[in-house]
Image (cartoon, rainbow, N blue to C red; front, side, top):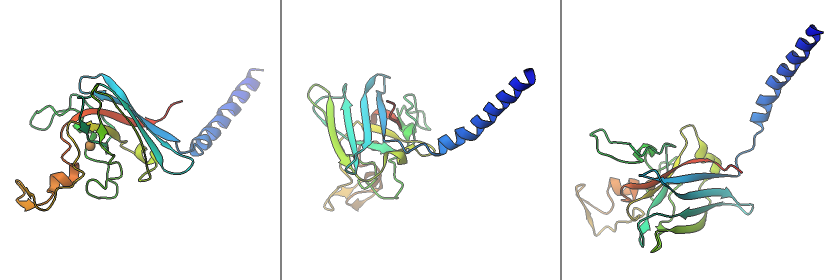
Length: 201
Ligand SMILES: [Cu+2]
């Protein structure tokens, strides 16, 4: 009797070991991703969803509050899925969310042709920002690569790398956009950050 029980349990374990990898391999790409945005003080400020549409493209939807009222804020996908509020630069300067790295840029382009460069957020006089737009620059599953990714909202506006050639950059001493502008859009510090994850329903 006991031997039969052991045999049955053994068979169940073997079947499970065979079936689990098959189930994982067949798991479909996520329909969408989301990022819960937190501020440098740890408060939850909102949510961004990125969902594939049946008609093509990815619908990106922001619902955020607690931002500095009445301004435009740059927002992008960044290359590392780590939102460290206590991050400091090598010389000890507090730099919240710099752990998320630079702009997510698998194609090696300059700003604002990075795949996750989004339109600036218009912040209401009440400090909220709500916007929905469609992009076909990426699929949500691409954001879930080995080191993940994060959505960042910045302290400044986004110049989209668009510095006219009649302006001279300092200290690069050249006309038009310098390297920093071409990498960041001069978006400044980081007000909010959210790690990109598959949408849970
Ligand atoms: Cu950014």
